[in-house]
Image 1 (cartoon, rainbow, N blue to C red):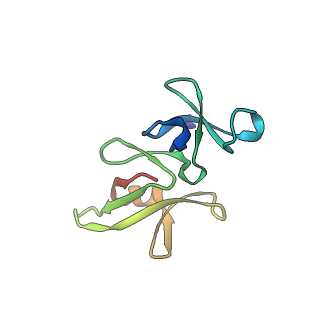
Image 2 (tube, helix red, strand yellow):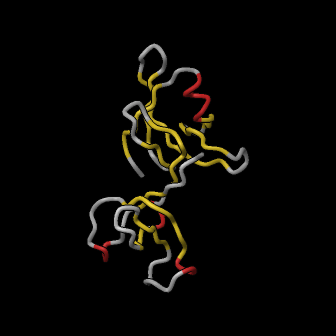
Length: 126
């Protein structure tokens, strides 16, 4: 079963300096704060206001160091021969209903990259 998990950067008002992980909900469901986006932190079980542009969903895959890959992460790919390939951005493509790697305007399925032997590593989280 796929793990449903979101990551987001807390707003400045929270005084938290690390991303929070948990379940996402919109402000319309709760009258909690002035923030539109909230994540129920899995560690503290508290609703944490987060910056909307930093929210990314776990895509169900891990990089070569077993770090969870989230939508919006920047990855570097190593081909099967070990040569470095340029950085990729992980994005959801609604037209094809799946997660894709984007580089220089080209898109290809992240699952295909792994299948043909690419080794992916996170270089920057969203």
